Image (tube, rainbow, N blue to C red):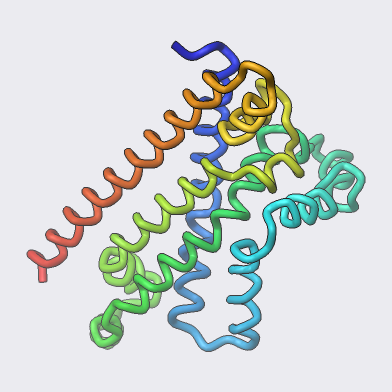
Amino acid sequence: MLAPEEWSALLISLRVSIVSVLFMLVPGVALAWLLARKRIPGKMLIDAVVHLPLVLPPVVVGYALLLLLGRSSFVGAWLHDSFGIELSFNWKGAAIAAGVMGFPLLVRSVRLAIELVDRRIEQAARTLGSGPLRVFLTITLPLSLPGVLVGIVLAFARSLGEFGATIMFAGNIEGVTRTLPVAIFTHAQTPGGDPAALRLVAISVAISLAALIVSEWLARRISRRIGTAS
């Protein structure tokens, strides 16, 4: 059985991961489509900035978030004074940190999936009078849906396992920002905490494995339906 603080870490991690994926989904898909289908100035720079969290140490990302959105920053102070919103050192900050780290994986997976969609099908729909949004919603998105699912799972798994940016921007507050990775680290540093750390490791592995299996199953079903429809 899990102790109350272990249940808390599990629930906080699930909340943070789900919220981060939900908030990054629409902008992630939109940006992936933009990078895959449009010629825009500075495209290589935009692509590099999007993927920067993949190559930067997570603590650097967390510190940058603290400088940009922390209470003492211009944006953080404005949000707090104007709307009473505080992003650092609470679960919202953990969700932001997880979202920033998972965003590149979502964009990359969706972009690759969109690039595999035959443009001739999209062009044929446009010649029949469909607008860009309708073409995207009825052709591009359904055909790239397996890649979107893969991106969602990768982003979720990355959010679930995020440690460095989270502990820098959201801290290690029990019951508030102590996610599974942070809780594992805390227990591993505590004398006699190895059993609890191992339980949380097993839970993390089980959740990630279940997410991968479900996404693979859904991707195969969608691929079969697309193949049958075509």
